[in-house]
Structures are given as C-alpha cells and as structure tokens.
Image (cartoon, rainbow, N blue to C red; front, side, top):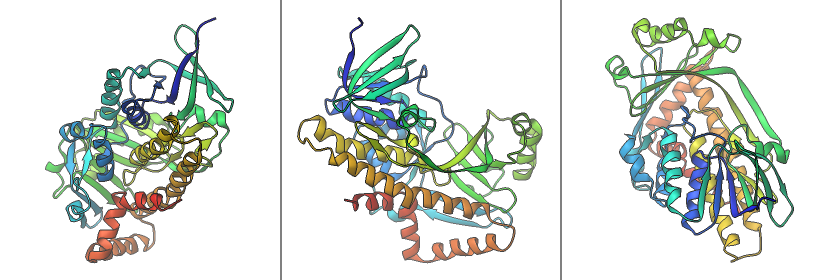
Length: 402
C-alpha cells in the first residue's frame, strides 16, 4: 500500500489567498501542502487592486516591495458622471496619518500568487502540488483524510486541518454542504483590455475610474501594461455577440469615438455574484476567500477581503498548531469575525457601489451624484468614506467582534 503523505495544514487552491496563508504558515515552521488543480497559478484578469491595509499585511511576508515595483501607485480614484463629464475625486494622501501606503497598488493578482508559490520552495516544510485536484476528504475529528487526483493516479494526504481557498466553485465548500446564499446579477460583465493609452483621449483620467451612467456604466482601471474596461452586458445575448468586434467597436465608439481602430488583448465575459457561505468553518475544515464569499468588483474588495481572511485565520490557527492551546475557540472566532464583517461591510458596500454607478431611469442618478458631492465637500464624511473604501473600517469592525 502506498504510504500516506502527512502535513499539518493542507490548502486547496494556489491563488492569492491560498499562497498568502501557506507562506504565513511556512514562515512559522508549520508543515503545509498547497493543492492546485492547474499547472500554474491562474492568470485571472479580474482582481488587480491592493488596498493600503493589505499592503501593510503583505509586508509581514516580504512581498509588498515586489508589488510596489511591478504595480502602479494610485493615490487618487474618481467617481465620474459620464453624461456631464463631472469628476468627483478622492485622494488617499488624506489618510497618510494611518498608513505608510496612502494609495492603491494596481497590479494583477497572479504576480502575487506566482511569486509566493515560487517562494515556498525555499521552505523544507512547504510544498505546492500543481496539476493535483482535490477529490474528496473526510474529517474524522482528529484530522482530515484527503484524496488527490494526479495525472497518474489517486494519492492520499492526512492533514490536521484543511483550508478551502479554492475559489467561487470551491469543491471543499460543496463537499461540506455549506449553503452559499445570495444572488447573481442578471447582467454579465465584459472585461476588455487594450494597450491603447486612454488618458490620451479622456482628459483628467485617474488610474482608477468608476464612471456612472444610467444607460452604460463603466469601470476604467489601469494596470502596468494595459487599460481594463469593465462594462455590463445584456444577459440574453450570446457569448459570440458580446465578444464580437461590433460590440467592442460600439463600446469604444461611445467611450473615445474610434472603436474600430482599438485593438484589444482580451475580451472576457463573467457572471458576478453576491454570496456568502452560511459557515466559514465545519470542524477541522475552514473556508477563506472566494470559497466563502463573493461580491461584485466595484471597490476592489474581493481579493483584499480574502487576504484579510488569510491573516485572520493564521492568527487563530497558529496557537493550536503550536500546541499553545487545546481550544478551537479561535477558529469559531475566525468564523464570527470574517463572516460578520463580510455581511456588514463587503456585501453592503459593494451593493451600494453598484447602485451608485448604475444610476437609474428616474432621478436616482442625480440623487446619488448629489450624495457623492456632499461626501466630497464634508471633511469628516470624506475621511470616513475613504477609510471605509480603503478597508480600514472593515478591519476595525472585525477586531471588535469577540
């Protein structure tokens, strides 16, 4: 019989959340195995914003300098009215008293995952197993038995704990039978990327722009090599139509006036969800990141909140693994803190951001624009708003939960 591999923590998924948690554990001397079905860390085009507190956290594992080097600093972001051209700007320099990183970093998430996955090779107590798919697991109360499919067969792994950081379609969450409550937006989102410098065509363009409009709202995001344009689409149209030159040309015609001349590097369609798992923890199996919560991308909270999950869980799990406590109350606290703040902050804020940018067919668009102006013009409210959008408020709220 083939020997069963043994580790303290197994992590399903080598995305940002899984690789961050694995690095934290490896640096603390914990035996950790990351199981990833892909041949490499996925090159996901969605997440690209790192908020100030996330940069501070990632400094603890030595990866923030790489993000600063590869990414773009975005201290200012815009809420723009497409019809009038009005810009309401917010400058994170105003919260420099609470962070050494008073800006967002715009950098594709796969740079983080790949760098951390490669970095794990330096730890004899850490392993990343690519092209390995978690099939099933069984929590017997003393540990978790895991079956892993590889190209050549089925292998067995025994871990003290299993972390499901395996994304929106998490097999870990599905086997646990944990409900994933919420809804899916009727629109599909189309993400176009282009090397064309949009700032040459649109005056006063920031690196991060949320363009509000009742008919066709947009998000314009700059990453190091490309501009990304995120637009809602008619959910009844086919993939071929939505990815077609005609659709692309129309979007850019309305944006800068010469759509046929614009060359795109990617045309990606995806559905957007607002969902939260009923529990982030069942016995010795825990969920983090997109496996436990999904939200729309407006505000850039998804990946960041997942990384915040990883740091919170590490803090609770390490004393148990080190034998400093026999109680698993910390794991219950992880569930309470992160699940509660997901509902109270991430879900609430992203829904509000979606409502703001979509506008409305009556006077709702004007009312929301007026509300944003009131925030902008009030020093106290503007600071509170920026601390909330930078995710400091969510961390403070989580820490207050006992």
